[in-house]
Image (cartoon, rainbow, N blue to C red; front, top):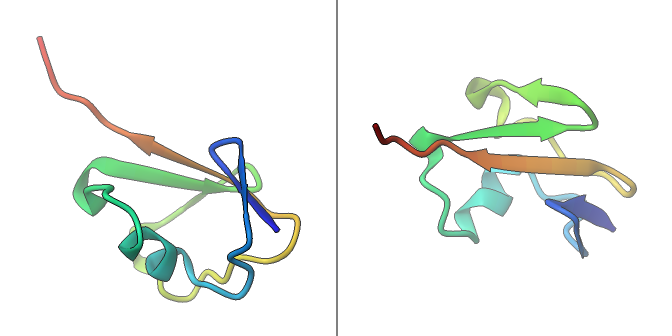
Length: 64
């Protein structure tokens, strides 16, 4: 099981990229942190989610 933004999901074996395709996140406006480390966008395809991982997906919001 993988914890994403506090929610436990059964997505072990999925890449970050594969997971994000199942969501409505705008890839250009997010940052992904896995186990305390920022995942570079260039590594989304090769970063495989494992049992016990803790992931935070943060959306950037513009405004003024």
